[in-house]
Length: 528
Image (cartoon, rainbow, N blue to C red; front, side):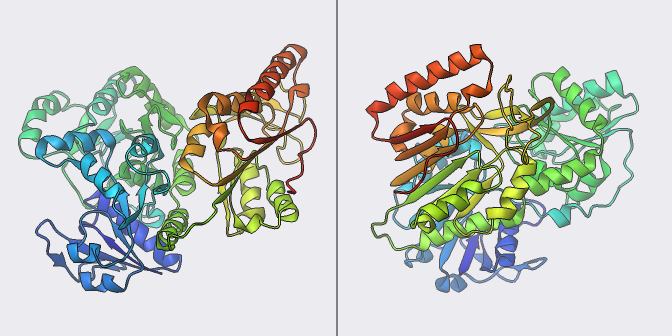
């Protein structure tokens, strides 16, 4: 497949370009013929610009492409060449809205493109914004692609021998909707109270009037600031040199991805799912405490790199991106879309049984959700190679958040649970780990299908999921529901509560056309 991306060339200076570049490099490793066209505001292209293995090509090269990926502008004649277009939505909703003041109505433009037949798919690198973008982009066009980062490049930084112990890095761009001023204040507070020998190193400072406006603050903190700079080309050396990165962001910005890839522990906004150390950016004491926790974390640089490899693996991004491109190329003929949602996938037993029991199993897109990282490794090894199977290291629950998972000691963690008080499965509540959870109703609304099968084996969490499906109306999207119940594995009082929830669910689900199979042991057959 030939994929041509359109983005302004800007090595190590532009986050949008960096994401496009890493995506192109990953697509090539995955076997695609991926290239970059540089289109500037003047409509002219720049050919032959080189960044490692990436070299910009002439726009005419795109006439033979299977898909055009728009990060910035596309040559007008190419938009009418009959080649499917995938548009990357890089902006944050609030920032996109603010641009109307400068005459650039991003949201209106995006809405217009969403109803343009030439634009087959839209991708976002931030799942946090799916809820907003789906109000103007049809659900069947909007896709999430994990943001990539060049793991090898950012792991290769050089220690600059910067001043201070510890060395705190602040490296965010000062944008119209969010600035790292709160991070700077919290870092100053940490140094004053806990580490008099510490220094703050700032990169990405604005220029001109904006910098002059900051001078009084920067001068007031001159004792705590070790260095300050604007845009730089050797950011990876700063990551390698500093002990912790502090940012107000919660989404996977370039700074968060690059810092973790370089092994620099990150203190991020309290909703960030990519780091263990996070706090409300406006709560300076909480951020200061999070800095202390990050610095005290055993093996912190190794853990940071592991987090980057888990969340921002370029090959995972390439796999999903190629899937989006292939979908964009499909002829628009009536086709039944089938989906199997395996909640509590463990190590893949359900997928193998589904293939045994359903002759049409290969026609389903199968999503396996398993939050336990150890079981998830086995899940990927057992079924991750199957073309229509996607393994997701998360739990599906009634709310998008992070929660504690209690580990079970039987059969590779088969009895793991998100609930307190489970009496079976060898659950050790002293062995809890924090895991990501995603709202099941949001997930189903983001993955529409003609036929949707849902399997649940979640060790008690079904009493949260089942009411959520009813209350949100998401049950209307479910064709068949297979669920094993677990109230018997809890004490009497909790069991009575759970049984009452189940009884109410059995009554409420009657108003839907869903085929429901609840069992107390094992799972009902998928056979039609």
